Amino acid sequence: MATKRTEANQKWQNKNKERSKYLRYRSSARVFIKELSSYDDLEELKRLIAERENTTKS
Image 1: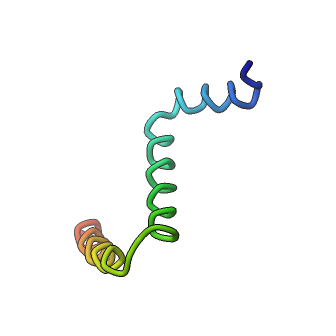
Image 2: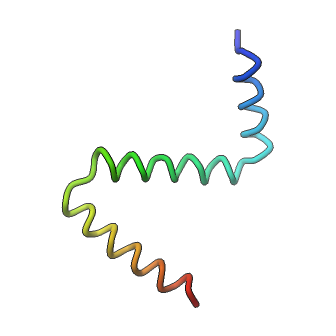
C-alpha cells in the first residue's frame, strides 16, 4: 500500500506536470555530468551551453 507521502507526491506531480518534468530533466543532467560523462561529453556540453546562453540573452 502506498504511503501518504507517496500519494501526496503523486498528486503534486499530476498537478504540476511541467515543473515535475523540468525537475526530472535537471536531475538527470546533473547525474550525467557528475557521474557518467567523458571529457568529450563535457566539451560538447560546454559548447551547447554557450550556444544556449547566446540565444536566451536576446
